[in-house]
Each structure stands twice: as C-alpha cells, then as structure tokens.
Image (tube, rainbow, N blue to C red; front, side, top):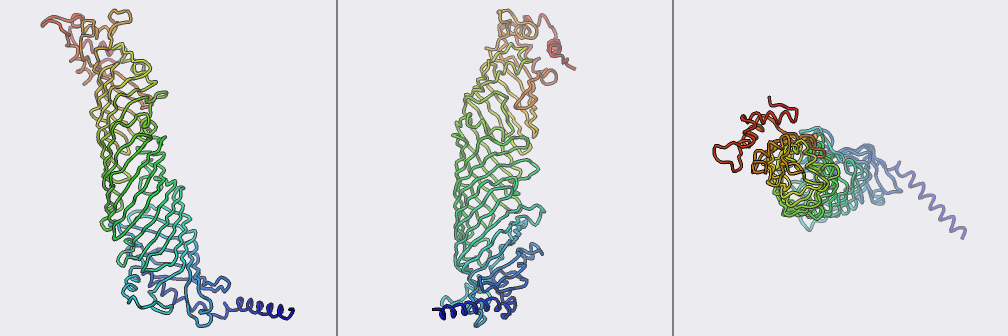
Length: 574
C-alpha cells in the first residue's frame, strides 16, 4: 500500500514538474504567425498579437495586446483592441505533434468601435465575408482539418468579456458608449448558424440583452447575415443614444421586448415598447404617465428603409393608431408617421401634457372630455415636426375659474363662469417642433362665455403669446346683480344692445401671456383689436334705421369708446 502511494506521489510530482517546465520547453511564440494568419484570413482584417504564453493547467495559449484593424474606408485606427486573448487548445496534439486544435477563444476587455458613413454603411460589414465565401466554395464532402487552409474557422466557444462598444459616424465626433459588454457564442462557424448571447450596459444606465442565433455569415456583407433573436432593453435613456440632439433637452426612458429576425436583407421586429418620462419639446417636463406601443416593423437593410405597420399607441386607456415609414439614408433616421385617435379620454392624457410643454394651472384638472387627433410626424428623429388637427370635446376643466382669471375682461362683460369651466369644444391646427408649439385657427366654444378664436405660440421657455377675440354669447350678462345696467364699460356694452345684451356677437379682443400654468389675460386695445371693437360699436340690436342707440347718444365718435376702454385699463390707445 505504501509503495503504491509512493508511486502515485512520484507520478503526480512528475506531472507537476512537466506542467511547470513544459511551457518553457515548448516555443509557443512560434505559433503567433500561424494564429495571426488564420485570424486575419477569417476576419478579413490585419490581426496582431503580443507575446504568447502557454498554460498547461488551463490548456490555453495566452496572447497580450490583441489588435484587429479597421476597414481603411472608415478609419486607420483599430477596429478592436483587447488587453489579452486566451485560445483554448488540445494539449496532447500540441505537445506531441505541435498541432494546434482550437477549442475556445476568450477576449478580455475588448474595445470595439462601430462606425457608419454618410451612405449608411457600417465598418463591420466586410468582416469575415471573404473567409465565408472561400469556405462556401469547398466541396461538401471535404472535411476540415486542423492543418487545413487558414480560412477555416470553427470554435467550440467564443467569449468576449467586460468589453465596451463605441458607436458613431465618420461625419461626427460624437460617440455613444456601451460598457460591460459580454458576448458568448458556441460552435462558431462562418458557414452555419450558431447560438449567441449578448449583454451590455447602455449609455447613462439601462441594460440590453440579446439571445438567439446568428449565421451563416453573408459572403458579401456581414451586416446582412441572418439573425433570429429575442431582444430585451431596460432603461434606455434616449438622450444618450445619439438619436436625439442633447442640446434640445428632449428625451425619455425606453423599455422594450421584441423578436428580431433578418433573412435575405429583410429585417422584421415585433414587440412592445414603453416610453416613460417622455419629453418632446424643449421647455417641457417629463410626462407623468408612460406611452406604450405594440409595434411591428419591416426594414430593408440594403435600401436602409422600413415600414411601421399599423400599431397601437396607448396612454392609460386612451388609444391611438400609429403607422408610417422610416429611412436612414445617411447619418440621420428620417420618419414619416401618422397618429390618429378618436374619443380618447382626456383624464388619461392629462399627465402626458407636460411632455408637450403644457402645464395645467395649479389646482386645475381635466375632469371630463374626449380628444381627437389627426397628426403627421415628419423629419429626422432629433428634429421631428408634428402637424395636424387636435380637438377636445365636451370637456370640464375642474378647479379653473375663467371669470376670475379674465378679471380685466370680466370688467367688460360681468362674466361669471364658476369654479369649473365647461368646454363644448376646442379645436386647432397644431404645429409642434422641439422649440415649441404653434396653434392656428384656434376655436373654443365655452357656454358661459361664448366663442374664442385666435392663434398663438408656446415657446421653449413655456411662454404664451396668443392673440384672441371672444365673441360673447347671449347668456353673457351685461347688467349689474340688481338688474340695472352695469357701470363703466359694462354699461357701454349694455347700451350697445339697448341694455339687454341685444348686441348679439359683441367681440372682446384680448391677448394671453404668461405660461400655461399661470396664464395672463390682457385686453387688446388698439390696432386690429380697436377695429374689432369699432365694428361692434355700430351694432344697434334692432334699432330702426337712422335711429341712435344709447351708446351712440353718449359717444358720437366710436373712437371715444375705444379711449374709454383704454382709460378703464390705464392703457390709452396711442
């Protein structure tokens, strides 16, 4: 028993000595030209390695400072650099016959730079194409051998650990960086598909994971290689991707689950996306409610153009239909989409309004109403322009007393709207850009007041600049609480209609300044506004031809009434 133990210990000791001494006896650096040659032929780029060492314990060759050249049409800098490269090998063939059989490749801390040019081509498109073409030409019956041509590549396991990917354009110095990238692939071959898993940290936080199959490598363009995978994106900050201009202050957080497939240069995606904290105009605030989209797309990789199939966009229980096209002819992705929605509950949309730069007055809320939209979204993704029509119907703005807000206007009309504002309808032609909103042909029908018309803008700093005119309804009262004609301008307007509101459609011009959260209603005296009032001062409300109204008896010149308005608001007509 003791002799057996001694023999075992001697054998183990010899093996330990061999494992420690053998790396110094085997000239492993002689394999560096072979490895560089095989790797260069496989990727179609110049591959360089540093010093190579051998570890019998792990059964691998280790090389320092891996470098893979870039496509010279894109850059003279390396496409990939790494601190080290470990190549797993079969030890006995290596020791006995100096035959190199690769079982696995591990690249530590690689740094990859992905660039696209103005034509939409990527610098990785030419990777491996020549080698794939060479292997594809071989007779099917021909079996690959470890000592065959340099173009033959088959790796049991390929690993890229803790790397970083830098994405950018040849026409710009801006770059987006994806850190902690880990890639694992098995049974890697240029002429067959193989499983691959990719995980990465996204710029400014978030995670990406892709799990599927890749290959065989396209002989003409690696970018066209077939792919079938599931993609999960969590917490992608749009402002950090390079798709949006950071100076515009736009952004949002995207979560996505999708199935990807690519075959013959046609890529398809289908899945769900959620956009949280959306910010669509400069000066806005992140939306308090997410937008979810069930989508399906088709994209032609050769033409860099795609179609967004009819999809559903949801904000709470509000649903809209989304469809369109998109293309990437160069550095930009250009969108042409349409959004249509009918009878969308206003209450569900309220929390999304800040993303558009619209903040309801403090204490106010949309208690009721339905929204209709018919919008076109066009332009590059970092400068989208939205145009179309928007309509709000049968709405109630709770906690908003328009009469008190329009206190100076109320001095003209005796307007009292109550604590809640009922809205029959609001319609407008909308133009929205990252710099702000513009509303044309604005029309609001408010039973307690009448009809408001006008146009204006909401800029990137949330400043309102609207020029409006209120055509008073017959229900608007021009008398005091006791039934007698109101004093001051109220009396003037009462006189226009014989003291009974008989001047149907009397118009009060005004401006809206301030912000959406704190609007300021200011009478517009002079200029176009004055001419609007002058047209109303001739209103006789049933007076016989040639007869004078009470107002005309008091003020023979309509300009006197305009000046009277200016006196009331301490703003005389120039």
